Length: 239
Image (cartoon, rainbow, N blue to C red):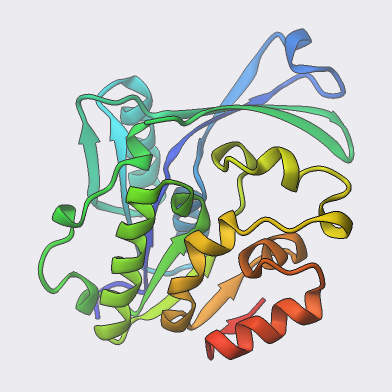
């Protein structure tokens, strides 16, 4: 297999505030970086010496060109990064207000990186890689969720290792206001994330998530219960 890892999902541009400890409206300048969970993992693992490819889409505009150039400079295979003439590249703006607080504004609705299709995957694609990474943010969109489930199944059948990074991004989910409230764990449950994502668990070899993400992905209140749910659904290692 020619690739160690194929990352499938979002790519975008992140603008980080150069001025620290001020709110975004007070920031004067920003630094531009490649963003999106899948693109970020592809770059990071390439830097660690793996042979990595990315399946994603960018807009046919300067930000899309920036991403493609940066990925190639990082030795990430971009053969399967499409260019969408009808949609813009996703954009996120971040401000760092203190050592433990930051704010963000995300422009991702109907962006190029959130519109993928099985038609973009050639025959025999998964036989080329040892592992495939999926990110949970794509499951917030019903159409892309179905795409991701098919990807997981196909990769599993091709005997590639399937990795799921739960990657909960609140701005992409309808239930975010409830989930982000302090009362969430104590007073209520919401099945939106679980309903969207749980069908891929049996295909996974590795699942990555914070405590909050594991609770959301299993629709449970307590970590031990979440682990028990996962143990019933999958043989995957959970980190």
